Image 1 (cartoon, rainbow, N blue to C red):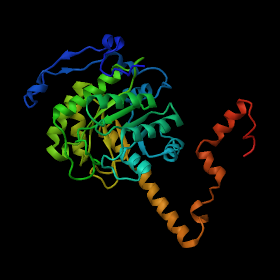
Image 2 (image 1 turned 120 degrees about the horizontal axis):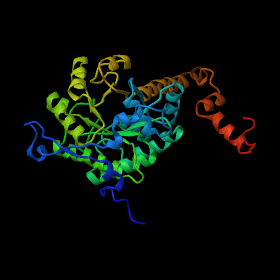
Image 3 (image 1 turned 180 degrees about the horizontal axis):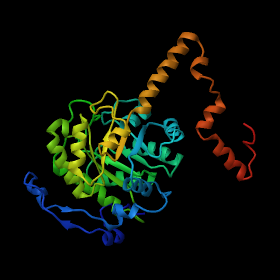
Image 4 (image 1 turned 135 degrees about the vertical axis):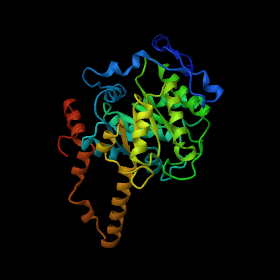
Amino acid sequence: MPGLDYFSTSDAAATTTEQQPTTQNGNVPETLHESTVYYNARLDPKNYLEGPLSDNSATRLRQMLARPGIVVAPGICDGISARCAVEAGFDCLYQSGAATTASRLGQPDLAIATLNDFVGAANMVCSLNPTVPVIADADTGFGGPANVARTVYEYIRAGVAGMHIEDQVQTKRCGHLLGKQVVSREEFITRIRAAVHARDAFPGGSDFVIIGRTDSAQVLGMEEALTRLRLAADAGADVCFIEGVKTSELLKDTVAALAPKPVLVNVISGGLTPAFTYKEAEEMGAKIIIFSLVSCVAMVHACRAAMHALKKTGTDFSTAQGMDPKAFFEVMGLKRVMDLDARAGGSAFKEV
C-alpha cells in the first residue's frame, strides 16, 4: 500500500483554500516578502459560532476558540493526571512536551523524546474521553517539512485536537530555560506551511488547530517575536503563542499586536511568565492559557512525600489518606467499564 502523500493538495483542500496576496513590512527578508495570506473558507471562525458543541475534539476546540471565554488547559503527563483534570471539570487538556518527556522517559525537556513518544502518549490520553480536546506540544516538528507533515498526520490520527510548533533549533529545550537558540524566520514559516498543508490534505478533511509558537522573544526581542508570529498567522497558523511573556503589559501588547488572531499564554510556576490566573489572562485578552507543569510538579511533591514517609514509617497508611483500591480505580473509570460489561451481557465485574 503506498504511503500517504503529505504534499498533494486534496480536492477538498483545493476548493476551500483561497489565497490572497499581501505585502509584508520592509523588515521581512526578500524570500518572505512576496508571501500570501492563507485563507480557508471552511475553517473561518464564524462557521463555529452556532450550534451544539461537537463530539469531534478538533471541531469542538475551534468552537471554543470562536466563542466567548478563555480556554483553560491544564498540563497533563499521563493517564492519572488526565483523569484528575477531567474529574475536576476541565474541558480542554494540554499534553506538555516537558511533562511527557519526564513521565515517559524520566528525562529533562532537552529534545530527548521522539515523535513516537509524543504520539504514544497522545493515543492514550485522547482515548480516555475523545470529546475533550487535547492540545499537544509538537516541539520543532521533529525534522524538516516532511517530518512536520508526518507529525500532523500522526497527531490527527491519534485524536489530538491541535498542536503547537516552535522556532527553536532541533536541539531544543524547555522554553523557560536559558540558552535557547532559534532558526531563521524562513525555516520557522516553512514549518508552519508544512503543518497547514498536511492538515488541509488530510483524507476526509480535518479541523485540526495549528498553533505557531516562537521562542525568539528571549533571544532576539519582542519585536522579532511579533514579526515571526504575524508571518506564521499569514502562513495559516490558527493561534499565536509567544513563549516567556514576562509582564502583563507585554501580554496585553502581544494580544493587541496580533488581533484578531487568538493568543495562547503559557504559565509555569517559577518560570519566565508571571503566575497569571486564567481570569487575569482573559482580562488581558488571551484566548488560551496552559499550565504546563501543574500535574507533574504536584506529582513530584506528592510522590516524594509518600516515598519518604514509607521509608520512615514502614507503611503507606498516612499517605493513602483513606483511598482504598476501589476508590482509586473509580477515578480511573471503573464504573464505566463495569457498566459496559453489564450492558454487553457480561458478569465478570458484577461485583468488585
